[in-house]
Amino acid sequence: MDEKAETRDRILEAAGRRFEHYGYSKTTMSEIASDLKMSTGNLYRFYPSKLDIAEAHARAHECDEDEMMEAVVASGGSAGVRLREFHRVILEHTFKLIDESKKIFELAQAISRERPAYANRRLAIERVYLVRMLEDGMAEGLFEPHDNLDELAEMIQCATMKFRYPQLYNCFRIDMLRRELEGTMDLIYKGLLKR
Amino acid sequence: MDEKAETRDRILEAAGRRFEHYGYSKTTMSEIASDLKMSTGNLYRFYPSKLDIAEAHARAHECDEDEMMEAVVASGGSAGVRLREFHRVILEHTFKLIDESKKIFELAQAISRERPAYANRRLAIERVYLVRMLEDGMAEGLFEPHDNLDELAEMIQCATMKFRYPQLYNCFRIDMLRRELEGTMDLIYKGLLKR
DNA sequence: AAACTGAACATTTTGTTGATTGTTCAACAT
DNA sequence: ATGTTGAACAATCAACAAAATGTTCAGTTT
Image (cartoon, rainbow over all chains, first blue to last red; front, side, top):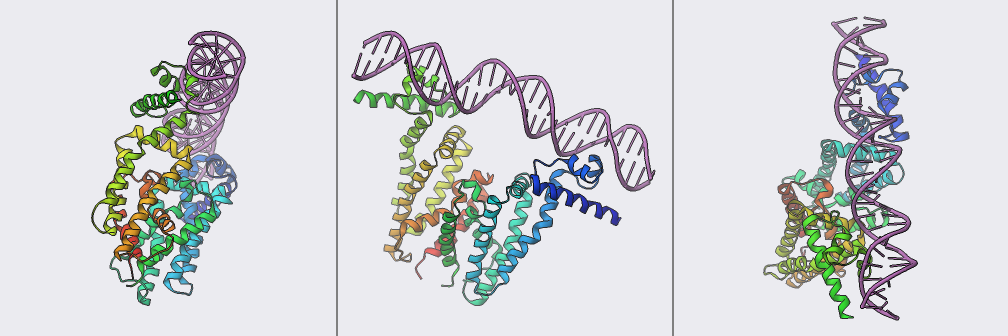
């Protein structure tokens, strides 16, 4: 039954090439199938739907984002500095997607629209990194102690939503967003500091 | 030339009735015109476009919202309590619009989509109230002094965007939003406190 | 039996048509 | 002159048909 996993991978690769080249909506199941010289029906023995292929593709690329976040969290400096850098990196990353790689951005949008659970899971993962930085900050004696760190991280996410989904506000001015993020982080940072 | 202003008002009233009953998209210029027993062309001598009538209608009703905000700002209690209440009131108000009065909500959406400048102006007005509460809080000795209060208010708006446009996140669970707003306000509040 | 196909089906997208509606303007009325 | 009209125009919308696409499954191959 290792055969099966291999075919799943081949499907994922073929689909990935199409997704990145033509975008999610412009790649069809029959194109993916014919790239692999198989029938459309057969695809469904490996993935229950096209959206699931897209989700698998996103999952396969998650590690890139995770590494990006990990790099910041594990970098030197105080928790406050890293927390700020963390959000800067996320903003620049999403903005780059919107701006440069419309194809991947379309994919991301399709997934978070049709699969809100997936988007929530990603936010939960992001929170793991946030919690680590909060813990570090408390250990440092920089941040005020809290008992529910995941909830605190959730609230930080609420306050920085604008920078996570800038397209929702039709704000495509990265320079404005950068300035607003700095100011918002100032506010959040002060709110976390030990009194 | 007082005649003119009167006709403008009559147009606004007729359009307003239609807007509130049938929504923005379902009221036509010829309906407004025939309600007033005039021609469609004549409407354009008083308003350059349908959207301008909608904007004028919104402007005419601004005072309701302003009074709502004024009531909170002028109410007793410390600046911190009022700041929190201010955002609660805004959340409940927008949510009520979405939920109850789809017609007015459609109007509001049309305006903020087609006239971003109008939405920005509204945010600027809201900031006036925020600044007043910030000033009060500083006078009280509750908040840390700042020099650029409008900018500070802007950052508070950034951090509370999610609660101002909940429909953007397809989050229609008022109970969840309430909880998130409380947490976010906790964070912001602490960030403002004097050290 | 297990793997696979491709035609059949259902859903979505696209294209097209005509009607509706926002807007303009030459002609008319005051 | 000034104010007003309603037909003309252009843009948008709604409804429908046609095409494309996602999904399923009876039947075929291995």
